[in-house]
Image (cartoon, rainbow, N blue to C red):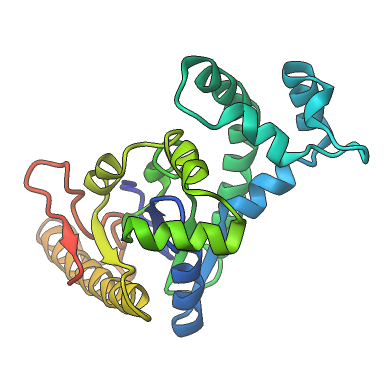
Length: 252
């Protein structure tokens, strides 16, 4: 996680496919003053950029394009989602084309929202946040836990996917336990409003710990230097679980 002090903390949301991350992020935004950066719409916009389309055509051919000249995402997805070596190689080629552009746009939006002192947090809703290395631009990363049966029902209802398609898509991501272990906290999307209530509580906890850490840092600095008129809030309000002495929050 990031160690850079920022006026508005950045919170990443990850989870399994169909875990309800986007709904949880939107629900938090309805309750608290947070800005949501959704990676999926950014990814879709990036695929419409002329330079990206040219590279996709070069590497994947005309077959992944629709008649209107735009990339046919289902056709492209059929080539890059799966766990066999050839599919993984194609996915890596696609990510090499798209991820730099997506990352640049995510960073641009973060910078824009940092100028909003009214915001309590910036939430990044991104399925591949950990795989893309974006944990380094987050102050905290939270895992949205959801039962497999619930996730299957969501993707069937919202995306028309079969259980096999869900498994194929998920095979292209980190295993769930690896994701969970890499996060600072876990919320449970197993009941109405449960996950957003837990996330709201975590946000409040993170804010309190930030104030305590800043106060402690200021007191320590005051022993060596004259008092300053400003206080720097540390980027990391909670030690990541994989740091020595770090703790993992489980919002139950």
